[in-house]
Image 1 (cartoon, helix red, strand yellow):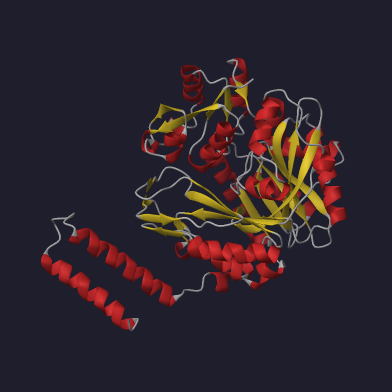
Image 2 (cartoon, rainbow, N blue to C red; image 1 turned 90 degrees about the vertical axis):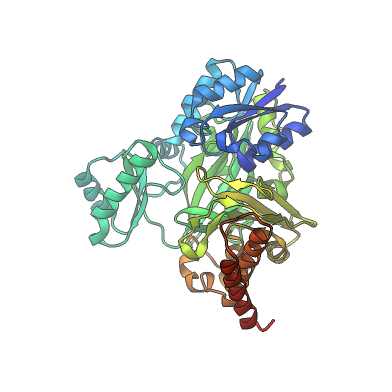
Length: 500
C-alpha cells in the first residue's frame, strides 16, 4: 500500500491533495521552485524537496527533477494534480519505468484522449455522439479552407493537441477564416509545440456540461453526475455549479451512461472528466476528455459526498471503487468561484505582488481551497489563480445568496483580485435565473464591467492610507516631508469627496 506520495504540483491543488493524504495516514512530499520556498504547500507537507529555478520549464515541468525528488525522499507514488505534467503520457510512463505509482490513468488513455483527433475517432467508434467535423489533423491552410466550405459556417478551429482554450478560434464570416486558421495554428505551435488543428461545426448558444467519472482496475466505472461550466471567458471556466439547471433527470441518466461508455472505450482507470456541449434542444455532443482531476472537482465532492482524491489513491492502490453507481446521489446545490490575482477592468491583466492582508469567509457550507496568506508574494511565473471558493446549500437560490455573502466577507488587500467581478456575476439576472450559456459574459458585458465609482474612490483611499502607514513607519527614507504632505492632501480630497 502507498505510504508516501510526492505531489508534483504547487499552490492550492498541492495543499488539497496533502490534506487527504494526512487524513489517510500517508506521508506527503512537496516539491518547490526558488520562488516557492515560502509557499504554503511547502510548509504543510511532511517533507519538501527543491527542484530548481522559478520558471516552470526549469522546475515543475522537468520530469527528471520530479523523479529525482521522488527517489531521494522515498516516495512510492506521485500525484500530478492538474496542469504541469498531469496529462503528459511521457511522465506517467517514466513513473512506471522507475517503479513509482502514478496516481492517474494509463499512458494509453492519456495518449488516446489527449489528442483531440484520436479521441474523436475513438468516440465515434464507441457510438458516442460527437460534434460534426474533421477526423484527421490539418496542417495545410488550403485543405482547412476546403473543409470549412464543406461543413459550412460557423465553425470552431481547435488545436489538436490543445486544451484550456488555447489554439481555439471561432469563425462566423468567410472574411475571417484565413486569419483564424493562421492564428489558431500559431498559438497551438507556441503552446503545445504542434500546429496541427481540427475543425468542428460551431454549436450556437451551447452549454458546457461535464461529467465526473471514476474507474478502477477491475472494470468498474461510475459517473458522479454533472457540472455546469458555461460561465467562461475566452473558453476558460470562471464559475461552475452542480446540478445544472438545464439537465433533467432523464438527460442526466443518458449523459451519465454515455460518459461511462466513453471512459470504458479506452479502458480508463482513476479519475477523469468527460466534457460535452449541449444545444438548446437538449442534444449533446462529446467535446473532450480531461485525464486528470479537474479544478472544479470540489463542487462534485460537496454534492455527492465523495472525496475524489481518496478514491484516486484507493484505485492506485489496486482497490475496488468504494461506491457503486446506485449509491451516487446528488444532495443540495454547490457553486465554485475561481479567484484570480488580476484586474477584470484592465482586460484581466495578472496582478502579482505582496498580499498585505487576507480575511477568508467562513460559516456553514463554505470551503476555501487556497494557498496565499498575509505577507505572501504572488509570483509572476505561474497561473494567477490564488483560491477557489466553494459553497453548498440545500437549494440553488440559497447557494447563490451564500456565495454573495462569502464574496462580501472575503477580503484581500495589496493586489487586485476578481472577487468583485464574481459578485457581479452572482447578481446578474441571467445567472440568477439559470438562463445562461457559454456566451454569458459577452451578453452581460455592460453590467459585469460597469464601474462602481464609489468603490473605486474607496479603493484609492485604502491604497493611500496603506501607503501613508508604510512611509509613516519609516520604511522609506527617500520620501521627504513635502511628498508626505502632498499624499495627505490627496487623501483629504478623497475624504471630502465622500463627505466623511
